[in-house]
Length: 365
Image 1 (cartoon, rainbow, N blue to C red):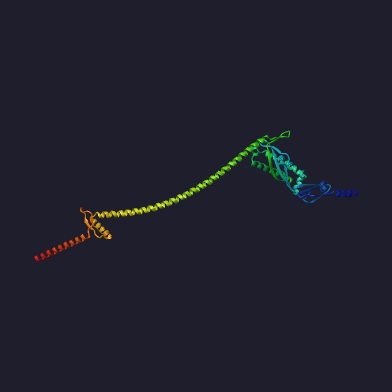
Image 2 (image 1 turned 60 degrees about the horizontal axis):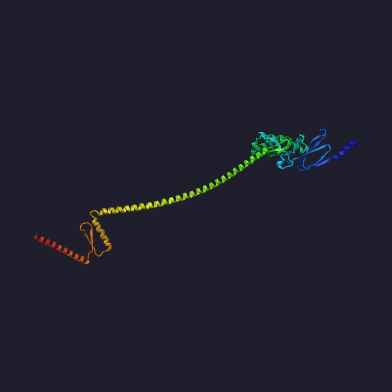
C-alpha cells in the first residue's frame, strides 16, 4: 500500500504541463497497453489549450500554418533551401531544377491520427514526407519535357500543374494539403563527381536565349515603329480624304453656281435671240411691204409723221427724176406762198372755164 501511494505521489510530481501555441494542434499518445487506455487519444489539443502530460504520455504536436520546402538555394539566395533537384530532359540533357512547395497540415482529428500512423509525429516528420514525395514527382513530370519545352512558359506551367495534382493525390491520405507548387528556376547543368558543376551547355543556351530575346525585342520595336507609321499614315490619309472631300464640295458648289449662271445667261441669250428674230421678222416684213405698191405711200406717211414731230417751217416733197424715191428740197417761204397763190388762181380759172362750157351746152339744147 505504501509503494502504490508512493508511485502515485511520484507520478503527480512528474506530471508536466504544455500550452499549445497559436497555430499548434496536438494529440496525446498513451504508452500503455490498449486494454487500460493506451494508444492515440481521440481528443485533439487545440491552440491556446493547456495539456497535462503524465509520465506515460507523449504529446505529438503539429503546426497548422503553411510551410515551405525549397530546392535550389543558390538561385533563391535562401540558406535554408536544399540543393537543386537534378533530372534530365526527355532528350537527355541534364537539368538542375529549383522548386518551392507550400503545404500545411489538416488539423482535423482523423487526419492527425492518420498522419501519426504513417510515422510523422512532428513538423520535421511532415516536412520529410513532403520532400520525399515532392522530389519524386518533380523528377517524374519535368522529365517529360524536351529541352525546347523548358524554354516555353506554357509547357513549364503545365508540367508544374501535373506535379501539384500528383502530390495532392498522393499525400492527401496523410492529412497534408499541397497549397502551391512553384518552379523558381532551371539550369541545364550537371554535377560532376568532384562536386563541381558543368554549366557549358547552359551558357550556350543562355547565349541563344539572349539572342532570341534581343531578336524578339527588336521585332517588337520594329512592330511598334511600323504600327506608329501606319497610324501616321492613317491620320495623313484621313487628312487627305478630308481635304479631297472639301475640294469636291467646293467643286460641286462651283459647278452648281456655274451651271446656274450658264443657265441664266443661256435663258437671257435665248430671250435676246427671240427678240432679235422677232425684230428681224418685223423689219423683213416691213421691207417686203415697202417694196410693194403701197411702199411709197407708207414711206410718205412715215416721213410726214416724222416732219410733223419736228414741226418744220418749210419743206417740199417731189418724186425723183427717175420716178423712184422722193426729192426733199428747201423752198423759200415767200416763193412757196406765191406759188400757192398762182396755183389757186389757176385752179380758179379752170373752174370758171368749166362752168362757162357747161352753160353754153345747156343753151344749145
